[in-house]
Image (tube, rainbow, N blue to C red):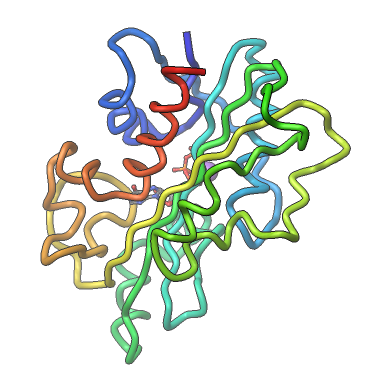
Length: 217
Ligand code: ITT
Ligand code: NA
């Protein structure tokens, strides 16, 4: 049984569509989110901490909203900013910008305590070229400065997903978090059902890569 480690049930609703029925359950564990300007190291450290806590295979999911005109803010601080400013204030701030383009990013970190055969490096960034090809800046959360805690020998495998869009006034009741203010292809994520969001979203792209690897690992 795979544990999807998150305090956010909305993430698991999306993830379940990518994994065989009954093969994943949510583990409500709030791992330490280290201060970092990239999602990769947060997911890598979180996966190790969650694995040691659960003593079972884990997948952690670190996501964020990156607003171009705010130099990527709130990015890795998206959770804190949602809790403090709130989603509508983020829209109000973005409404004053010339450039309202934004992107969601998601990094999944998998750890099961075993070494990965093809991974001499404790952090396997196997999909970073694919992420880089996904769009401008998409590969940035797994760049060459990445240290993922090389002192920690527990291997972690990372999968990244990215989706471009723009910040708009809130619309729609679906999804969670910043979904009402994130528009992609004329619809906000909160106006899409789960399958439609998954088909284009940052999490859907990361889960697709993970599910493919997980099925034939
Ligand atoms: P966990 O860390 O426990 O998984 P979280 O909700 O705090 O739950 P993140 O730190 O990854 O998760 O999320 C950062 C913020 O981005 C948080 O405010 C989320 O609500 C939001 N977020 C993440 N994925 C999102 C998505 O697909 N759509 C809208 N908002 C999202
Ligand atoms: Na979080």
